[in-house]
Amino acid sequence: MHILVTNDDGVTAPGLLALATEMRKLGKVTVVAPDKNWSASGHVKTMHRPLRVKQVTLADGSPALAPDGAPSDCVAMALLGLVPEKIDLVVSGINPNANIGHDVTYSGTVTAAMEAAIDQIPGIAVSLDSPGDHPCSLNYESAAHFARVVAKQVIDRETPTNLILSVNVPYLPISEIKGIQITRQGQRIYRDELIERADPRGKAYYWIGGEWPSSEPNQGSDSGALSDGYVSVTPLHLDLTDYKVKEELNQWEWE
Image (cartoon, rainbow, N blue to C red):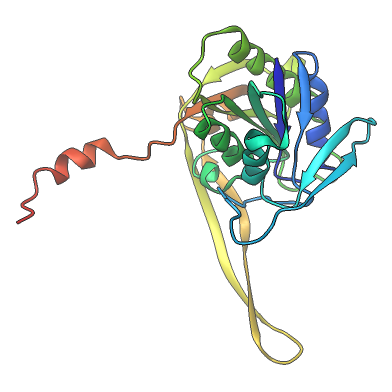
């Protein structure tokens, strides 16, 4: 079993090392992760500039490759031949904050797993539901543990090759997590603001800011599972067709 590990927080992020360490219990691990932070980068494919790759050494002494592209670039490059050996599974993370609801469209962590599915390889994205204002270093033990639990299930069973699983883990000790729930995407509530400022020459520039997003913990949703102390596992797919609306549109008079 050959597992590709990546993330969107950069190759030196502690969540990446925690994930790679745990995945090594399941098989051979190759790390290909961005050379910088690409959080909220979405699904990127870099086609208008050359991509460069650095060889780096992680904090535990293990090797990694660090392209200067997005997480989805890292996966695409690995599968296209940057990593010569066949890859059986892609695991992305561990993101320091949850990716629930519409977050999955922004998340570089999740879209790295989507890139794997495009190439018919199962992809798992792992995120930790830590407090937004957490004052010190995060503990990734629980998230890494449950990443391994989910990955082992994917390895041991005949899963679809285009499988995408978004895994969100409560910020709790392993002993306090109640279990795993299979969930749907919940509702993320954003409170974004456009902040305008002036540079020293008086020209306007902008930040997209605002309060930390919240969610509605509805039963059966990713946010509901997290609020109840469960790991949320949400199966995703890339077919964005709204089939109900499609049927309605077929009834319109298009002449």
